[in-house]
Image (cartoon, rainbow, N blue to C red; front, side):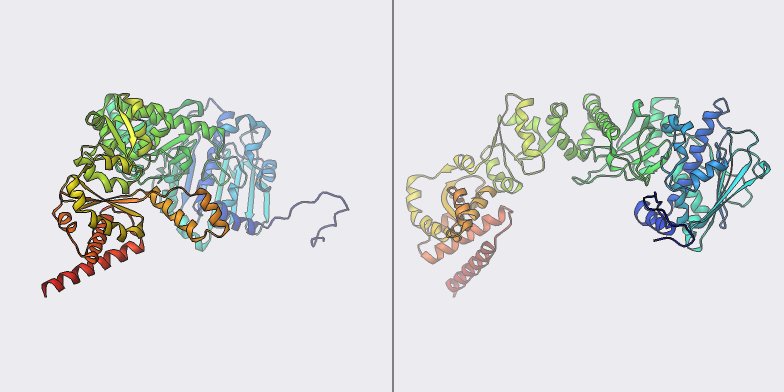
Length: 615
């Protein structure tokens, strides 16, 4: 097929792609860039790269000899730089060819690392807010070079003209946009100024803004980055960095950690959040590349466990993605992530060694983050495990304090099991730690690495039952009939019934049942229901002797002493069901439908019995 106005290609000849520029711009706006506002960042980025190239040509020029000037008055947006400029050949090569970048010129190849952008599509972002782009440029590489004008339109057409040098008296480039009516949100003077400060506050070249009202231009980046300034004292530096962190993130940091990786030219700060962060929630970090803001949501700069800090950094060697709104995942980024993680570990170590008050406030807010780190980091484990808080039968305390009181530390496998046994275990003198929270059980089992004299064991029902006092034989025989009725009533729940004495006496019964035991009973029940099918064979092969739950009645409780003396079979069964239901609710585990039904039925039956007795 031959396009109108073109000669047919001979067979086997190379062909070129036909580019629909409007379609490409739509692709950029909906799939590459997060917002039309990036047009200003792309223009500023190109201007700064041009200044960088100019500096390589004139290294002896004063530091403030070259700059960027922004202008917006509501009718036009203009970005002017004193950079290296473009020749007519450059214009044809770099502005008229999609995908090619002036940063790839052979003469500048060795300096690619000095440039922010490495893609040739940035100028197209201007079509997100304007239908025409006007570029006027004059090269600094050739004395008395003429000016060159390029006009690109959204329909894919462009024109190039060579103009006298007087059309632009100094080398550099001016890009002018006439905004579309629907782009006012992004091209109003106040918005352009705000975007310039947002993206360019840390740029190393001077950037000014003029709103066309006749007043003096406003500096977009009046001061260098706070970590690049000098301060009279370390305390003044610390306060200034904390104030900057509060300005950027909107919270007063618990502390600030300076970040400095000379190998990749990275500097910045990590701000420690003053409040607890939900587990697994990761905050984005503010990343600049060579002073230009790249992203405010760069999660990839730190490992997942470091969710207790938010960072703002400026780097030289990190590689942006094509949209320049996130970081390219490569070996350099992986090395930076590891190095920054090491800086956070070093800060924790310093706090542990020299500032226990700061460490205490940090652990109070972020103990979960530190626990996740300690699981995989032996140094942090040795340093901080004794300081970390855990829920125990002695209340919330550190493992170090808990191990001084209890030579044998028992740990549950779930929060539910801890809540079942906490009161009884405490009364029996057992030291139990709630191992049901994330990382806790694994960390408690590593306590002997820090305290060799401590013994850690999992708490199982047999261990707890062994610490409950048996009743005398006469009492056991007197209660035998009731216990038989209770076992029969609760057989449907695979629950045995025993009579013991334990504190506190106010607790009538204790239901001892682990999650694993319930799962095993469920699996056994399923195998029994399908014992003639394939699943029955499979589950039967996996089936073990299903452990039974235990309802342990407390002989010290007055209600239990009254219940075991009941001689009416139906009332005995009902009271046993009620005691089971009450113990199940106190265990705080989810109730099965049959258990909820039992609780309701036993309550109504006891109420009916009481009413009949009174009538």
